[in-house]
Length: 65
Image (tube, rainbow, N blue to C red):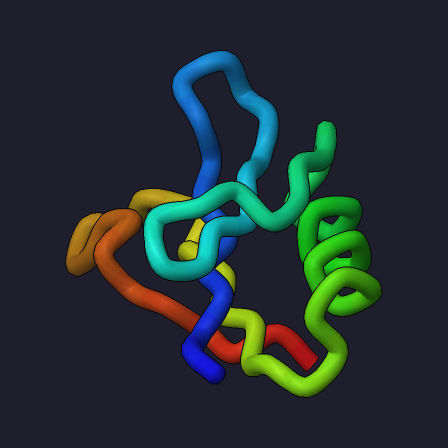
């Protein structure tokens, strides 16, 4: 079991990947998280920070609960 990462794509949709394979997709980050949880309920889902700030960008990951 490895982590699932949810990232925003260039077209604005979100993709959940695990080991460089697409697990789930969604129009919103929450949709992708929910679909990834249904596909792999025992694996941790980490979501990319979706906002850019003056002290940080999209390089931070948060566990989705």
